[in-house]
View 1: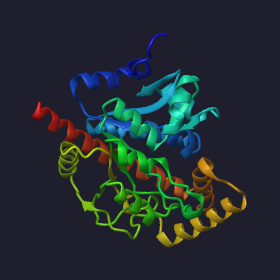
View 2: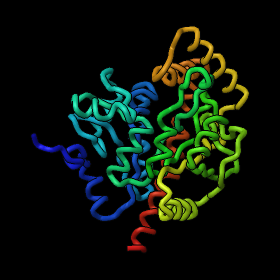
View 3: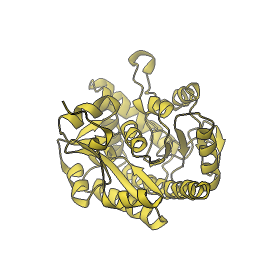
View 4: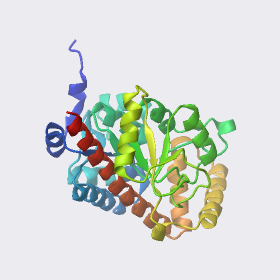
Amino acid sequence: MTMMTLQDLLEFAPEVAAARTEGRAIVALESTIISHGMPYPHNVQTAREVEAIIRAQGAVPATIAVLGGKIRIGLTDAELELLGQSPEALKVSRRDLPFVIASHKIGATTVAATMICAALAEIAVFVTGGIGGVHRGAETSFDISADLQELARTSVAVVCAGAKSILDIGLTLEYLETHGVPVVSVGQDNFAAFYTRDSGFKADFRLDTAAEQARFIQTKWALGLAGGVVVSNPVPMLDAMPKAEIDAMTAQALNEAASQGITGKAVTPFLLGRIKALTEGRSLTTNIALVKNNAQVGAQLALALAATDKRAG
């Protein structure tokens, strides 16, 4: 029996492969936001625009998914379309990766799975919308996103607009603290809450520039402190939603999910869909704006890290 190696499972797009050879900055992107996070065609259009923003900053985007029995690091336009439209695309976290790869199914990677794949591909920066966390009522449901455990173990910096406001943000931050995951805020002292800029909870540290963030991250890893870093980048002020409004709609959506018996992986897509409906589409506009904003910050961080690596080399 031939032994399978990591090289057998990773496939780099030509643009990403060239960037790796040249030591250029690369930014990982997840694919669940395409398959499960937004409706078509907004999902595919946003994915393309986010990639374009990263290229415009001078970095190389690497959208990650599982296709044809391989982890694909960088996708074509046709593959973005496939993820955006296929009802067969599975939501893939840590536990699902081996199955989806081995069975040659279509897999869209979550924050946790994208972190794993980025680390395997030696990509240090990953941009997403918001991280998962401790769900409300977790004291009885034990519903805690695998994203948090991945942040504790996998050394990738995750640029996000904080945690989704549908979560228990206080407990999410407590979990991250317990597992030694630093939370860095950009442009403000408080942790962001996805649709809104301010969760009401302070981040661990405020580092406004890419150079400061890169120095912090490299120091952490140089000390042998494995694990990720959360870079909380608030949604632009003009695109943010009022906190009181989004909190009320979140509470309504949570009650509806509970009454309909929706649990597990189905909860987040349901809640985001209901909030989109309740806001008459305004939440989707906010979601798109924050992802694009995160792409700018993530590209700048990746460039700062790459520049430091070149000087060290």
